[in-house]
Length: 127
Image 1 (cartoon, rainbow, N blue to C red):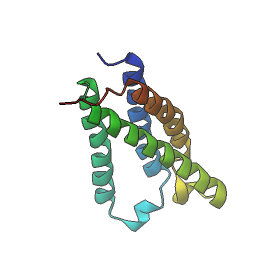
Image 2: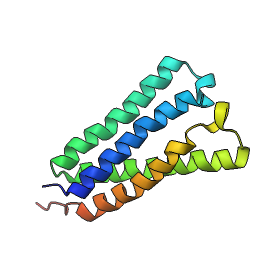
Image 3: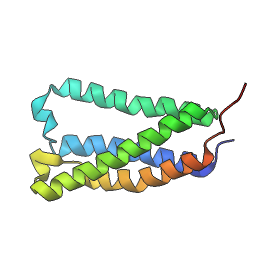
């Protein structure tokens, strides 16, 4: 059975991920000017569905699911840090690097998620 802390932290991270995409759209993230809006949403939809797929394998106790979940959490932490550093350096939020508010949530949820996943990582199977 998967530890409740793993599930709770991973679901919190997924929630902040959704909030992050909404914040990017609301704050008019600079990338929206550079690409088709439909393509932007398609890419973000795929980037959200992948970690849902990972969650299935985490819930079934698959080692690969844990490893991919750790990578996802690390990428989300870096995403949150990147948005915040960019806003601090450029001073540009609206039409710039929108996503820094939910980026804080990505950092605060991503670190525990990665740590809990690491602690719960099933040992490699030997055959």
